[in-house]
Every structure is written in structure tokens, then in C-alpha cells.
Amino acid sequence: MQVVRWRSCRVSPVTLTLKNLVLNAFYYGVTVAVLPVALLRIEGRWWGAGEPHWILRAISAVLGSAGVLLQGWCIVLLQRRGGGTPSPILPAKHLVTEGPYGWLRNPLNLGEVLLLVALAGWFASWLLLAYAGLAMVGFHIFVIAREEPRHRVLFAQPYEAYAARVGRWLPRRPANPGALGPDQPCGLPTSPDGERRPG
Image (tube, rainbow, N blue to C red; front, side, top):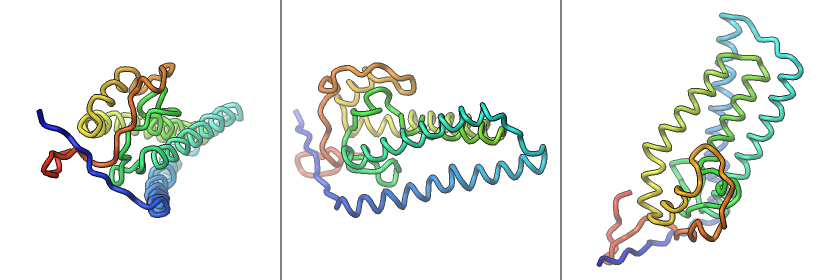
């Protein structure tokens, strides 16, 4: 039976924090600032600006705050526990199963959708609401096509156990955290001769 070993890879906390800040600043700058502003301008030019009721804005403020806090919590956990960032460019190297990840497997994506829905409500924009829906579809496709297969290669049985206990999008009450399996070490599995396996 072939023994699987894990290759270690250490990144300075300061370096990782800086990369995390840069990647997230670029990503959120595009997805929750540049694109929404462009869509609002298009909508205003063709159909006129919405007139949101104060109740809708109050609900949007609550949803937006929840989305921002949820994403911030996930970003911190992915760095501190996962040794990486939310970006596929520098993904987490450890399986994170605590905090919001104990309730569902993709809380970061859900947090962003909440924020986009909140923006749609705040500006009473049907175009932003459609954008939020497309974002959810895009996240779902990305998770199924790339992220989950990668996690199954990297974390094997611990991820399978985690996926069986925790829903992809619908929250479930967390089980005993220890039952989800220990965090896997950093890196891709390697064979005894040190050859890196495909991931």
C-alpha cells in the first residue's frame, strides 16, 4: 500500500496578510464597487433610478452588515486556520471546519450574495438583484466544478466526512467539531519519492 505524505509549506504571517489584503481589495473593489456602480448607471440611464422605502433600506442595512461580518470572519479563519486566502490564486492549505464553516461549507460566498442583495435593496435596483442572482449561480458552478474536487484531492476522507455533515448552502446545526476530522497539513499529497500528485 502506498503511503501518502504531505509536503510542508510555510508562509510568513506578514506576507500572507499583505497578500490577503491585496487580493481581497482587488476582488471586492471589482465585484461590490465597480460592477454595481456600472450597473446602477446603466439602470439609471435606461429606466431611471429606484426610490427605495426606508423600511427596505433598513432591511438592506441589516443584510449588508451581516454579509460584511460573515465575509470578514471567513477571511480571518481562512488565513489563521487555513493558511491561505479566499482567492484561488492563494487558497487555504488546511481544511477549515470551525466558526461559520461548521454551519455550511460556503459561508464566504453566501456572505457576498447577502451583500449584493443588500445593495440591490438599498438602491431599489432590479439590475443589481439580477447581478446577485448571477453571482450565486456562478459561485455554485465554481464550487462544484473546481473547489470541491480540489478539496477531495487535498483532504480526502476528512473532507468527505465534513461534506456529509455540513450542507453546501443550507445551514445545519454543527455537530461535535472533533467529529469533522482534524485539519490537514499544508500542501498537496506526495508519494514516497517526493513526486507531487496532481490537484
